[in-house]
Image (cartoon, rainbow, N blue to C red; front, side):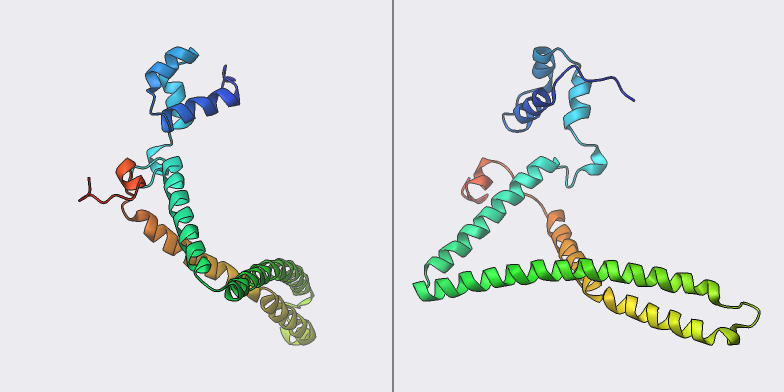
Length: 195
């Protein structure tokens, strides 16, 4: 186990904030806090393998947050243009969709637990099969088949949600691999031609 840091977690957060947000040099902070530059680099800079497109994860997250907030604002403006009665319909529908998602997630969890339990029972029934004369174990095979089928059916909601989530993650990863613009001009919505 490594040596305990001489800095508190709060000090490390302050150092990271000053490097990432304020753009202060690691060298000046190492002098100020009385620690090696390499200690700061190891603590706050990710390995190259962890970076995407050369971006630091915090910068990518900040960029994604700005994009999400813009999208929320755009949707809020569209909703605000609707008559009040239709705004209420949109609000009610959004609540209903959120509720459906939460309940489906709960059903998927219960289904996964049920599938796990049934698969375990089916697995224990395998010991009842006579390897020398499997035809004498037809009833055990039938029970195993029914339990396995029930386990598979119980897991369908969860498997489908995982599959849908995987597709969404794959799409997000594709968009993350595209160039992530940075800088104040981009932040304020100016194009390269405006600058």
